[in-house]
Length: 530
Ligand SMILES: Nc1ncnc2c1ncn2[C@@H]1O[C@H](COP(=O)(O)OP(=O)(O)OP(=O)(O)O)[C@@H](O)[C@H]1O
Ligand SMILES: [Mg+2]
Image (cartoon, helix red, strand yellow):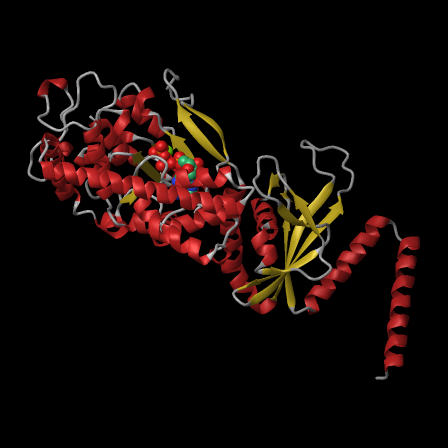
């Protein structure tokens, strides 16, 4: 057919359509016109190779969960940028819901978007029509009738019904968790703990720390992230192996090395709420148990500075008359490893029951995180394998972590820093034994002048190295002179050896590098100060 003939035919067809429409408008009332259009559409569907699914916003009188799921799924930025390719002229509306941490996209009225799932292309249309005025209704209905129409090829029907819709529901839940602001709960003394009241106070939790901004060994970071992801996706595994769906992490290291930042990053990564348990505010073990019962699943229960919270640190014979004997506190050889002081409000056994006992399984998908600056002070009952699944050492800043901080604060990539300066930093950062918090402080102070920030950082690192060398030299000298302090130090070291022997079976610590040297030196310094 010639091009001119084609255009002539098209023009006459359009003319006919316009004529029919005018006749329809003149002759038939609107209701009849709508019915006629529906009929035409249905006839079209019979001969079409496609199949259509309508997902309306309101199903009868109930809200259709699937509509919300589809809306959320299609609105995620990931979907818009990746899996879903919108046609060029698709108009997206942007929304930011109160309390939400991100902007969401939405399909404008009667616009379309395509999605690809397992190699199958589907078409989504957002259909919005005015609702006809109702004379009476028990429940006020929205003025607009909204819904999504899913158009798929007839041959892909099984795939879509079997897995695509489930996939959308799962994905939308993930997006919802990510977008929603998380909550930070804390407990306070004297709050009523009856069955109806909530003993936790909550505030909105908006901590900016993420695994991306966290300065730590990238390998270690990857391991932690994988462990968390496996945990969150591990419902089947935990059920199959008969284990409670919970996991424990012990974070230890000097102040300012990012323990709290890591907890925030964990919560942001998984989209979990945080329960910051203040143990000193809990009056007894039964109150502790009640607090646990009032936590929700998908949450991280944190006890910071566990060594300072309750008397967990003393070893020796248990006082039979103080009523806190617990067989679980015996070590492998049967001897008692913990003594709890009379009058202490929450006991070690109470805490162990909290994390490990039958009560710990009410609710699921929960992570326990304990932090301490002094792992050597903790009782072995808390450290033994299986109790805290992963022991994570947050140590002084090393070169890979330093590079992350330079990127965070100065937007510096490795190639932006002068090669010689970078080498200087690499050489002295470990010996300087500087915490990420101290590095951050220098960088924040000079953040308006990146060059100056780097120069000052190098100066600080060098100063610290000199200071440390001096201290180590002094120590050596004193050792050679055989002072009294040496004996005390040796005693301490023996105790640490004993501790290490107890700790050695833990595989995770080996995996993550159980670097106690810092603590040893810290303690030696403390001892000297005394
Ligand atoms: N590993 C890190 N990565 C990024 N920032 C860090 C890191 N460690 C510390 N910081 C910075 O230092 C500040 C203090 O860190 P954080 O509170 O996480 O340390 P901490 O180990 O919990 O200390 P403490 O033992 O005193 O509770 C944080 O606000 C953060 O800006
Ligand atoms: Mg902290």
